[in-house]
Length: 82
Image (cartoon, rainbow, N blue to C red; front, side, top):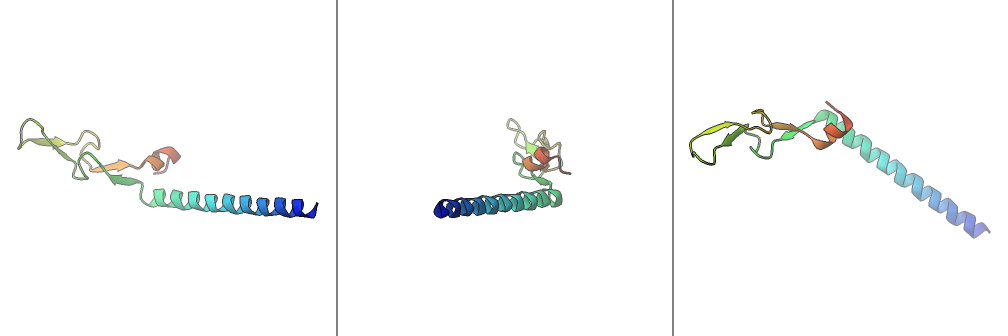
């Protein structure tokens, strides 16, 4: 009987430690999103300009980031952080 209680206590401690670790990781990710909510735009590589495929010397604003060169990170959209 005591070995079963000991096993259950060990499992409870492990689950609690895992929950605390997960909570700490989520809080640190949230802080990271708050400090740096934007990332470089992938299609234009952060320049804000897209070259034309048809005319080599022609370029315009990137339609994905509207010429800013930045996009909101996925986690910032998910947690509504700005």
